[in-house]
Image 1: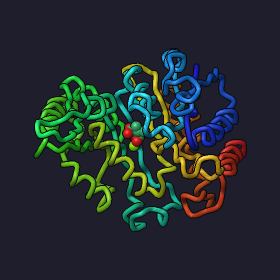
Image 2: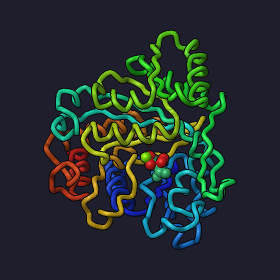
Image 3: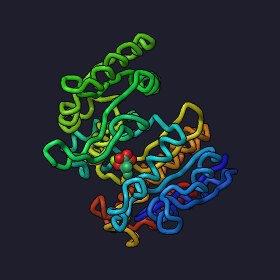
Length: 348
Ligand code: IPM
Ligand code: MG
């Protein structure tokens, strides 16, 4: 398997180093390559997703991605900002299906923003559409007839886009508790009404899955009121972005949630759901566990190596059960110490 490592900006390189330690400890036969991405690539080449990085990504079986974003480049033109690198990879590689699992690790009940007994029940999977929606619609600023500046971003979904993500979500539900909740805003948005109609059509192929629908505002409320009610949640790009950050605090820290971005084939990009955290970059205190769990998802989905994926996830669970905590969870273990703890469980 050819894996491309894209560490990116901020805490990206620090947490990537820990994922590499874990990969090395597994002694797998993989080929590693590296490239610049995000602000780091913009600084070196003038573009956040340079052609050589994109070419390497296209040639890789899987991409392990750190994070992009650097406040130094917040005022450059939008198409040259660091964030465009991840958006470009998602669209150029057709990575339309984003899987964001959220499950409470034993021992973290008191770290959740929710009451322990509410948090304990969390075991859900957010299936976020990643190639469409307001993220990729026409956007710009214009001047209205009255001379005011106006910004706009067009939200749209075609039925084929909804259908393919719905199939991914139904299949995921079949492998879990067979419950799928589709989240939309069909009471206000035409895009959402079409989304809902198409999801209902696709449901005919999955009679064993119980489908429900929820408006996104209610879903945000239910996610903190009773998150245990959710099994698989399928939603659009923008709603999925927001709800997955919210889910992360329900399990204790945004430093714990991994994600897989998949295309129709086996290729995938794997990244923590958090960003580059420029405020703590370079301090050696970032939580590397979401990055390490992203490596597990890579081995499972692109490598077909369920055994290694499970070994990593069990080791992370063990490290947390042993009481290892970084600053994000109120402890004082640094990035490298947490990575070493996972490696030592794996070597144990
Ligand atoms: C995420 C991030 C990205 C997104 C940003 C960095 C463009 O927030 O992966 O959730 O909005 O999708
Ligand atoms: Mg996000």
